[in-house]
Image (cartoon, rainbow, N blue to C red; front, top):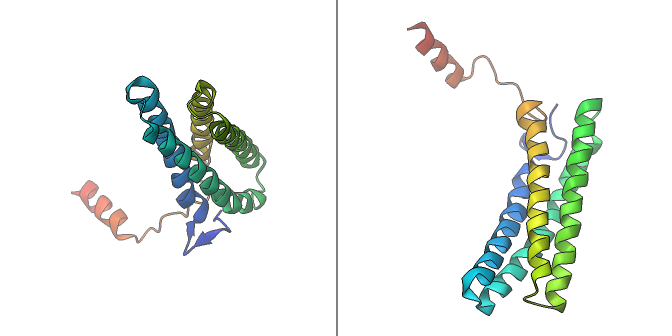
Length: 159
């Protein structure tokens, strides 16, 4: 099954999720640097902006993800996709609360703990996304038998 939210047969959702994931992980790294040793306000500010950018990026990535979800008809795949969505939405909510707390009381430990929980949640969500694509083959087009790479593999095995 191909993704209905794609550009030139390339699904949009996986292209966009890299941004919020990277920003949220970087935000956590900034927190660790701030709390473990630096104490410099620049790390708190970088964590806040990274967190906010991740929230915006996740909202953008959710649109093609929802389009893909609505196109799934196979029961097991739909169950995995819904679980993937719910876990990632929970992570997004945690990060939104985290962001709000940082605005109210910068430097507090609660946002740092929420970032850890959020990164753990999106890791589980990413695992489920990987399960759909890499294990179940969701939105993966079958390789053509005449593909040049396949032909060279066959030649090497024959030699």
